[in-house]
Length: 116
Image 1 (cartoon, rainbow, N blue to C red):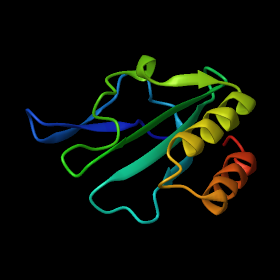
Image 2 (image 1 turned 90 degrees about the horizontal axis):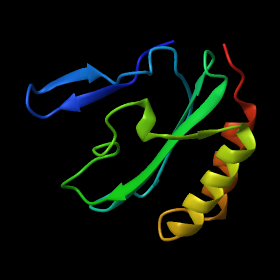
Image 3 (image 1 turned 30 degrees about the horizontal axis):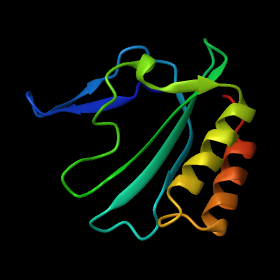
């Protein structure tokens, strides 16, 4: 189990993201063609909260995933079915980046997750 870290542009160091100390990686799903523009969806599971947490983001080379995330409360959360719906909506909203193959691969990755 590890804490999620975020790069602090003031101190130029990775710093722990508050409230994520027991989060487990479920899936990091990103645009396989990532170039100047990108899209990325990350999902985690918290055994203490017994919930999934996720955040999807997209942008260009001047920003990165999670730039607008500051604490665990910045993430959407819910059960596995909620996470799967969120992934489906994210891929539909970002169809330029994700095709059917990427969508199905993400579904499989989310479904196979087992909490440690």
